[in-house]
Length: 117
Length: 117
Image (cartoon, rainbow over all chains, first blue to last red; front, side):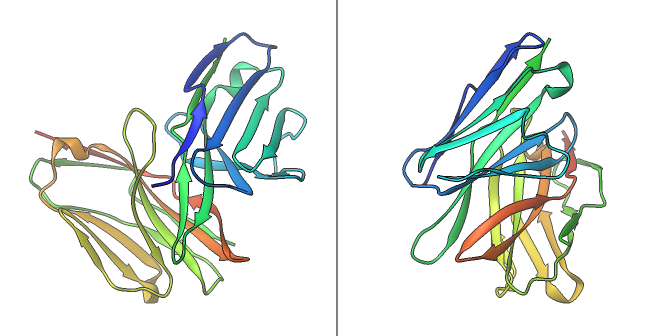
């Protein structure tokens, strides 16, 4: 089946630095990808919708200047956390919907655990 | 507005007991998808099932079964003869279908299942 990969799987960075997370669809093209954030012991919340060739759409309360999304190709979306702070420490998961002849599927990446010290 | 409610925050059972995880959803759309995911401590989401709004047939897969009732907007998940390996957080989720594709998922808050030997 289709696979979505994320890199890195975990990252530790110092406060004030920027971190880039990649989300790749390995065997299908994804014009849309979704970025979710999950704080410890909480649910997944949609941060933004990444659209190939156009600007991302951010959910209310998500700072677009802080969380930069670039969907440069049909198989790659990147999320850059700029000037990271400890409160940005979280589990970030991307997903990509696709469709075969009959069924719609939504594939999730394995997630990236970000720790900001 | 879309909403998914998982009223059970935590459930603890003894191995071999049956357990049902409840999920109630709200949507104004006539076409939508419902999902269940398992999230073990590693964090990666494990897809369990997807149902579209036009298919109310219940489904059984091994020890897992799902009861979809549109009349009560519920999509409950039952594990029969639970095992320690079933211990995880389980998420119910809802997605609209639009434009020939699938939208982002709205997740419930999750139910943490602990199965004790």
